[in-house]
Image (cartoon, rainbow, N blue to C red):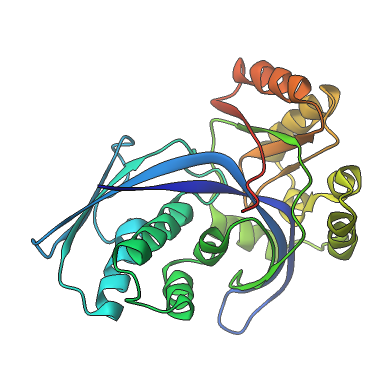
Amino acid sequence: MTEEKAYAKLNISLDVLSKREDGYHELRMIMQSISLCDTVFIDQDTSGIISSSSNFGYIPGDIKNLAVAAASMFFEEAGIKDGLRIRLEKRIPVGSGMAGGSSDAAAVLRALDRLYSGALERDRLFEIANKVGSDVAFCLEGGTCLAEGRGEKLSKLPPLPNCFIAVCKPSFSLSTPEMYRRLDHIRRVFHPDTEGIITALGKGDLTGVSRRMYNVFEDIGGREFNTVKEIKNTFLEEGALGAVMTGSGSAVFGVFDKEKSAASAAEKLKNTYSFSALAVPVNN
């Protein structure tokens, strides 16, 4: 059995620049891996069948699961006829904007790259990642990155300075396609100071990064975003240097320079919302 960690993703910033001719959106984001993770277990066999199971019973076990899709593409590209049993121990909440499914797929690709050493070159692994889903390439790379295009154009950035991150997901999730549709119909005024964040990362300035965190999806407004604002306010009241929603939601995170404050915020929110956790950046 092979085991691989699938680290959650956070958006330090998220900017939507325009809608593309192919129907997707042109993005510019700063993304960060954190220690909150799923664990992926892989067993090989000779059945020729690739399947998945999970402690979250409602997650599909067939090709609709990104982990299965990634494994199927890897085997097809490499000409491998083996079977594979994938077991997902999920901790990343579904529908949170933390790329749980994409991270599982990336973990499968890393594990298969080890198991079948030399079967595919690195560039081909990333080609598969981009076919599977927009966030999979980042989850395969990990650390701190500027992501552009659909998220597939990655540039490594200086790591997020040591800090503590409290994450909270309310009971509801937000549909990514619906969030983009709603965003397309509003006039956006604010954009993240992406270059300012990159400069702050280069200086190791955690406060400078945290104060510039921004996600344009929060401009949409509405009842759900009142809850997002409430969570952000709790983080700030507990001492966060900054707080922002990740992805298209609905999880919100706060960045802290003190572990005690971050833990206190996570514990306080756990009494009200469906999920909260404490994490740290993963920069390798």
